[in-house]
Length: 412
Length: 101
Image (tube, rainbow over all chains, first blue to last red; front, side):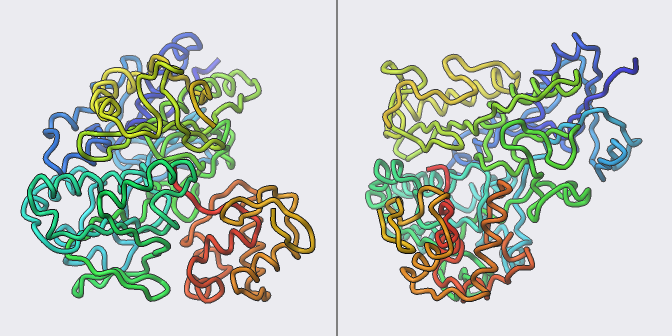
């Protein structure tokens, strides 16, 4: 029998985790596994949030992608020009086309400043910036050092975005940073969102709503940007509302990779329609999708990719053995949220259940408190970077945290 | 509970219908009235589309709606002033767009 070939597209968080988890089953069932990525660097993306405020060095956040890929998985450093799902092959930018028996799409998502008129003109990288890419976060670090007065706007163009809570954390950290620099009183911080508030879940809103007033951050909700007048420095919404700024920190429209669009495999935003619980592509049975590339209504976050991996690997085995798939991915995500002043909080949630108060990961003991600010939660986020490089990318489980969300220790 | 479409319907604190099976056109009409909207055919095209997409497990955004061919974004704002996606979703008996917190 011909050896089965599993092809993984993308060696970011999701692709790397699944490559590591496939090593053992690949040996057992005699599969060949190949992973393709156009970029040879692996970034610790949660670090982009703190980097602009002078935290971390470049070496803390950037590593060689190959260092995290296992032996026994072939790595191709190449771009992907098209996925030809009908003929089960992937055309590369430089190398020969590759045929597959099973494809894992883990091509992620990225920000697209060109999607909003006026965003990507002469002011991009000057008075209009983002922290969602490393080079941008680096430039922002320099700009922030000299920002001493004026209107500082943190803005979300449109949902979904990666790590939905990051812009809010960015506002909290900015408040802290400007206070430390002694310039907070000359700076107005505004948070502009297309949603109807900074917090949209009742429990989180109740526990955390006070943070915004305490930190004197003005919320402008229900704002869907149509265009930016970069000369007059203002955001303009579809219904004609305007918000002026001196420095705009925006999260541009987030889309799946262009290759998804070129291959006709995505929705309007290049996200691949995916079964919420099995992670199989809705259009092609031998394509599975993971991480930010899917259209599932879970957060676009590394923790989600980590929790998806078991279901995905299980279903790869089942699919190639001709067995029925398991439908057990529940949308589980958990996140450390920075609230400034060396404090943080932890949230744990899934498709159905909103973030609740309680102790985490162990009932009663914690040590982390859910939905409550605390110093230990902030320390947890710092420890998390070590865990990311050493445990999570290897596809190993995190002690006390299972892939399916647990209700133990949580208050309804 | 709220009296919508001539019956008692369970709604959440934002006035959104809790149980999809309670929704019907009369309920939608009353939800729209609360928002100061009189439902026309143009409104119904949007509401029906949202329900159909939701039935397929697809999350909706303003941009997706704008690119759907059902309605352009300017018209969407004229139909549902102030917060087109959340108001259209509310009238369609769906949940409001949220984030993770």
